[in-house]
Image (cartoon, rainbow, N blue to C red; front, top):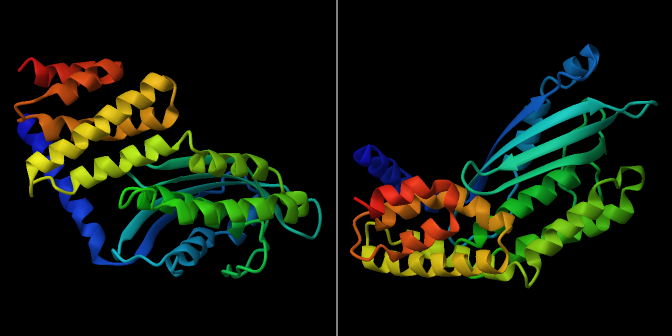
Length: 283
C-alpha cells in the first residue's frame, strides 16, 4: 500500500511538471439534457462540442510559463421557453480535476439552436458571460499556485464580467449578484492569507524529487499558515477543500522526513483524515 501511494504521488508530480509544455485550456464539456423536451434534445445534440470549441479555441491569458489548464465542465439544462426566443435555466459544475471547483444553479440564459458562440469583449451575452466568468475563476486559482497573488488579474476579469452582467443582461440577471459576491470574496483581504498559503505550498511541491529539504521547508510553512487560517476561521470552506485535495500529497512529502511535526499539525486541524496521519506518525 505504501509503495502504491508513493507511485501515485510520483505520477502526480509528473502531471504537475507537464503543465509547462503548452499554453492553452483543455476543457471537457458534458451536458445533461434529459429534462428538455425531445425536440430540444435533438436541437442541442452537438451543444457540448460547441461549448468545448468555444473554450479550447480561445487564448484566455498571456502565460510566460506556457501552462496547460485542464477543465471539466458539466452543464444541466432545463427549458424555460415561453416565446419565440429559446430560454433555458442551467446549472454549471466546473472543476480542474484536482483542487478547484465551482457550482452554480442560478444560471438563466437565451440560446437559439444553431447559434455560433463567439468571444466579444464589447458585448454581454447571457450564455457566454457565465462561461467566461467561471473560466477566469479557474485561471485565478491556477495562477495563484505559480506566483504570489498571481491570479489577481484573472479574478479581476471575472469581476468585470459579473459587474457588467448584473446590470446589462436584463431578464437574465438572476445569479449575478451572487457571482459578484463570490469574486469579491476571492479578492478580499480576508481571503489573502489562503492565497498566499497556496503559493507556498505549490512552490514547495515544485521541488519534490529535486530538493526534498527545500520542498519540505516551504510545504511546512504552508501547513503553518493553514493552521493559522483554520484557527482564525474553523469553518473556512477553502481551507477544508484544500486539505481534502492535498492531504495525501502532504503525507507523502513528510513520510520519510525526520521532522514530521507538520503532520502532527495536520492531525490536529484535520480530524477527518486522522487515521492517515497516525499511520505515518506511529509507524
